[in-house]
Length: 110
Length: 110
DNA sequence: TAGACATATACGCATAATCGCATATGCACA
DNA sequence: TGTGCATATGCGATTATGCGTATATGTCTA
Image (cartoon, rainbow over all chains, first blue to last red):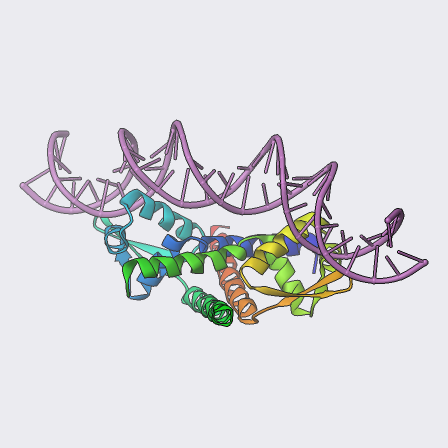
């Protein structure tokens, strides 16, 4: 593959991953697994204030990871692609394996 | 689940994702799919200078995403968990879907 | 059109990430 | 022990990120 083309793809790939690299955005995505929610519901459920929630949603929206439907004065967000959740679940499994490994090391030390 | 415990997990989860949110680290991980490589090989293959390569490897090492074996004066890196690659592939598929969607929009506009 | 409600954005600040360069550390071998 | 090669790190500059506060935008209803 073309060198600079591959760099461009890796750049876009990293942008997708970067959208996942914040705890609040992760919690938003998992919250949306249950179904579509509007901004106020997300903010209340997650204990994040409204402007912050809106900004995180903007990041996810720009990466096309969530879609929006306006309904009256509310805007409902939902997941655009379930594979994002599959990827998050895989990485959570990796995390779990890491924690177990660290625990075993701790057991050996004690 | 306990509230602050869930926050802690999301924090760790985000740290894993954050390790993937850089184009150079993504290219390093895909390079390691082919097998273990030392720092000099990675730097040369990817066109990244040595200190930068080393620092990116440090990030991946701290997150337990790569493992190291010293051999003489070289240090060989390899993938610690193939599921990281599976997750990256999923997200790359999401990216591809996004690009196709945008292309279709462009087609409609023209 | 005014007022209430839902959502988004602007601004300023604090913190963190990346990088290039120089240098330090670790290892091998004469 | 000294030299050379491989890898890691310290430092300073630049850029990016997240957030709180205030405010703007958009929508509905009276």
